[in-house]
Image (cartoon, rainbow, N blue to C red; front, side, top):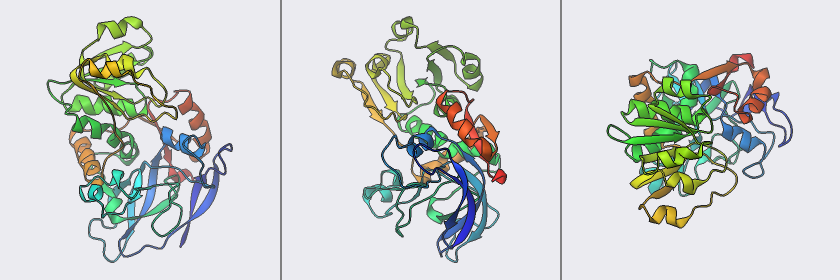
Length: 346
């Protein structure tokens, strides 16, 4: 076991504090990563504050991890010391079920093991990336292309793959009209990726205050959803809508914006249900779907795509003592567009 520095949540109602945690000894198939940067995801806040259910505290969040390999196990073949690598939202799975065998480990039928707050196969509770080091089995470590700096790469491990996966699955590309609901941590990545895939991209945001940013990031159009006329103007327009908002929205109204056979895919994860009017689906043979990150193979594909197209997240790098302030700013939508912690400040 190795003691490392970290920031942890002591309870659902307390600020994160500096602490130390134990990382397991590097096993034959393990990789030890010196974490350089860790992104702050809205999911971190939901989890540590108990929005998605009770947690075991103290809890170290963080599943957007970018760093350098400093030690490898005797049987590791995929990574070597000095490699630039990342770890996303999961660190293990059964590797045996049909979904794992298909490269969809995120949908492991026996339950994928999250990067933090989950019970690993050895019975320990996983602790995340708000720390200086992490030990992960090599199968769940991905390579970060040389063309992407580690700080802007970190959010790709969640925000990037969460939006890349549905864009790929539902065929975003040339000749397709894609709308992105919300221009935040997930939304800004969806815009960049969809534009790079060749789609015609529209941002649907509550107001026009981020319009200049949206167009700079690659959007072709930008509309305010607070304007009722938007839903009339855009009715029947989009082949695909990616909803990135982690709050309740009127799904039925957005479904009306789809073309025949269009799909609305939810990647935001609000705590409350999202009611749907069946007629909004039936009348246009529309689909309402959900998507959660991607498998390891697809995550590597996403990183390689970003490397080829020079895509990284728009970030604000912060020291560790600004984490709690950053949480409040995320909740107030006061970030453009992802906070990334410099772990050297631990």
